[in-house]
Image 1 (spheres, rainbow, N blue to C red):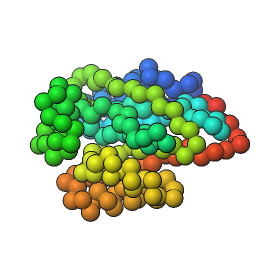
Image 2 (cartoon, one colour; image 1 turned 120 degrees about the vertical axis):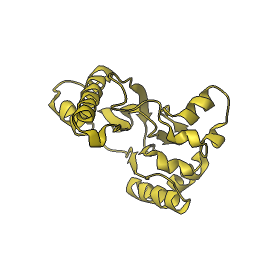
Image 3 (tube, rainbow, N blue to C red; image 1 turned 60 degrees about the horizontal axis):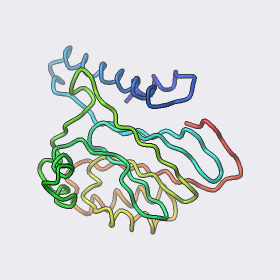
Image 4 (cartoon, rainbow, N blue to C red; image 1 turned 30 degrees about the vertical axis):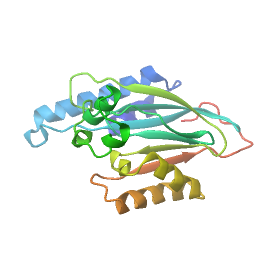
Length: 202
């Protein structure tokens, strides 16, 4: 969202959880104000997942991933495929409470009922996660439409893709072929071996 990007671009120090939360709150206030001033968007809200590189070196990069809502992120690494974010929707709440399985949640009607969003309330909580990427590890950030695929299917698509760009394209194609009922947007970030360190990269 524009407010988040503007706030973070203007920040001159290191980006941490406090700075990101401040930026998200600014976006939340902007959406709330627009809802009040424009009846046509009185029910407007948004989900948000962000990934920031807090340090980048040849053999490892550190990332701060934050989310509000049900747009997911995963770490695809040599040791497996791991969900980074906690989804804020009714189906995921049922999974966390042990009522249904994660596989069942993929088709549960509650997956479209968001329990936390930008603009949904006067304040918004941000869930942070710290992720380390090593050479050839990948960070996948997507909209919830990608979850028509199982995590095993996603992992297989990524494993076969020669580049991060190609992995993102193939994931979108696979989700659309799988009759995704929601929009499908995917970004894939791959850590490449480099001889140049870039501390404090964003």
